[in-house]
Length: 323
Image (cartoon, rainbow, N blue to C red; front, side, top):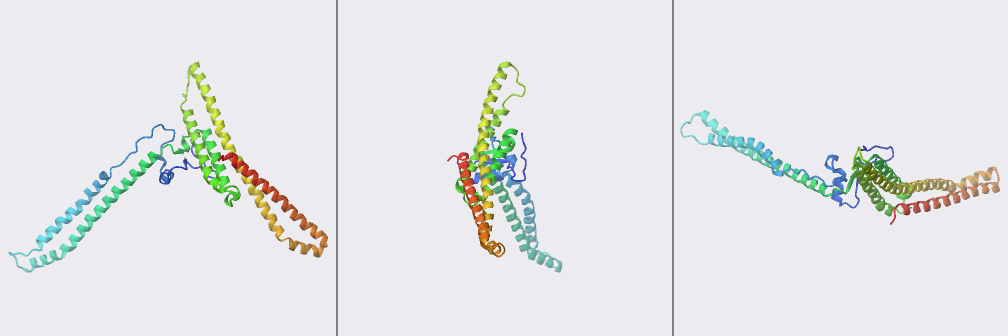
């Protein structure tokens, strides 16, 4: 099992997701903690562990009912204390009645607010678990539509990393950003290619792990040898697809380099009048014109090289991303 490694250029993600997955499930699969995701190689995903919203809300209601009940008893006591007394009319009793009568509305308001607050907190807790249950069900439904990096064997993971680097090299190139090499096609086909490669590598890794660690018996060893040859042939096929992506990325990088070189020459060529003026002052018009013509000729050569590089990049793209 291989842990995802990081590179300076492009960090390799810990999961690859089917680009055709519905947006909501795709977002959940991208953001979900690793512990909630089941490897694509698992035949049957375990049932999601769901939490009852009622069981979540009940403890909140029980704990919140204690201060509410105490407050209700306090309101009742104050209400009784504020009632007129037919027995005692002394000043102290009258003062107690007035204080109790004044406190009743405030205590009643506090109790009501506390009860509402407890109800809101319980409702929010129940809603949170209901939403979490919905997410878990969606992740379970998305099983097989994502591949985890740590479910791959070492050789499979390195192939996936190479494909990922090639994809990002193409997308990050200037000729891609400026739509000189089928930007729309790349943005649709490259994720699909990466997903197909990841899915094939996940199946390859699963089949590799099914082999016994210590086979015994000539018949079993013979069967395993045939099986391994078949797996190696499958891996070579996947490797060819990855190399096609890498060739496309290399041709794209070459086109980028020629593009930058061409821009620099155009920059100098646009300022050739200044060179012409200077050389006319110092070496004569004929020699100056020859020098400027040399710059223009070099620009034409680089333009041709850039056109050739773009053409080769497009051809590599058609080979790596069959429509």
